Image 1: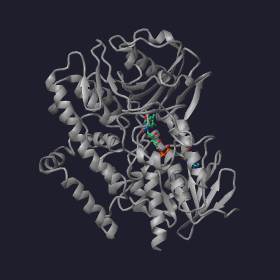
Image 2: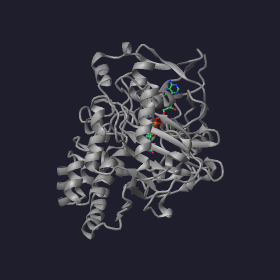
Image 3: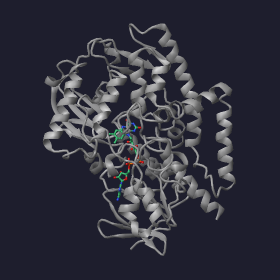
Image 4: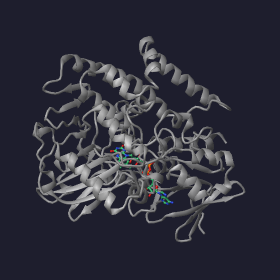
Length: 522
Ligand SMILES: Cc1cc2nc3c(=O)[nH]c(=O)nc-3n(C[C@H](O)[C@H](O)[C@H](O)COP(=O)(O)OP(=O)(O)OC[C@H]3O[C@@H](n4cnc5c(N)ncnc54)[C@H](O)[C@@H]3O)c2cc1C
């Protein structure tokens, strides 16, 4: 039994690492315990076929605040970018692709009215998302039993909304709970523009474009602008290299990171977390235990519901975290041809979501535990920016594919996987004719695989759906949104806590700051 640390962090996901770096800088003796053999959680790079590597979970960095990259000195710790500020191309089977680059929408036949409408929409949404981004950088204010910091947080939020001006304030209240289908249809004539916007609202969620509050999930994604990103970036070496830089930053500040050190349980003594038991049976003690695992895994799996009151357990069980995104990794003998796409743009973020109706239809089967017959896809060819990921002259495709429910009826049997992969390939053939003949190896990871690779319950992108009832002071559950769990000394620092998922680092950062503040005021 050892007792040489003040803080134990379970999980070296990017949030756990940010949390560790922040606490270590404040002088805490921190140990991070990670079950996997490398840090990063769902921000990781691994080999999927001999000679071919890929970011096996997240493949784009677009929400991690640039200010945090600088503060953690990640460049000094090895972070390099292969590509920054990528544009999005919405691919079309007829070659009339739409390219969105910041506020600029372009296609050979895109009308001036839609171009102007998109520029205005982009700026308008950026102003709303900036308010949200401000709130993401602070703990969510408590509405009952509030202290002066909660009241200050509320005032700040109110003030930020007021500075939008009367018209935008009114508009954000009108659209805030709307669905993205209606908003996109209201703002644009062009079908490609409508579906490209709607796709971004539902990516990583289990919602379709007509689900209420998908405008909110669109705003969530667009906080990236306020965090200093002109578009998605790709680190040299994939997302695992980003995690390595974070781990190096935490270590340089004095944190210890132990890999292949899975935690079997959190020790609770008289209502207080006192340490953890590792899979190996080793016991580590500390006065503060922080979990980077998702809320269900932490509270049900590591603590055990017997330690918690029934009302709280019910709320944790009620968190919606039904994974819907799959990853497809392709090893290619050559670059696929994409008719109609300028070769210079093949390295952009590519999206395959032909229409709003198609997006809705892609989601519908998932309600009945079926996968999409015509899935929607976000993909990139990272080797166009970073050839080190494949043998010379060869390429990799990394694709996020929806909708593939974790709880597929009949289970993800070999036959179901083969059929879903065939559907995805058929879809890719519509914009990359002949791609099938270039594939030397492929790997399909559906939500149960994501669950076992990264330890995320349900394989959910965000450790819990991004929707109004699971955001801000309701995340992970109402009354426990300020990172402290109802067991003394136990905290949550992962994507299941405020503000949520995506490689953003703010859950880890806010949690650490809360612990530091609590100690200072004790
Ligand atoms: C398919 C997919 C694609 C995605 N694409 C993107 C993208 O392009 N861009 C983006 O920004 N986001 C993307 N995301 C979302 C993003 O990856 C996650 O939201 C983010 O990684 C969550 O980070 P985290 O640190 O909170 O938790 P995680 O990354 O889940 O890390 C948690 C860590 O805890 C460890 N752990 C869990 N239990 C234990 C235990 N008992 N003992 C020890 N260790 C434990 C796990 O091994 C893991 O390392 C994607 C997610 C998925 C699933």
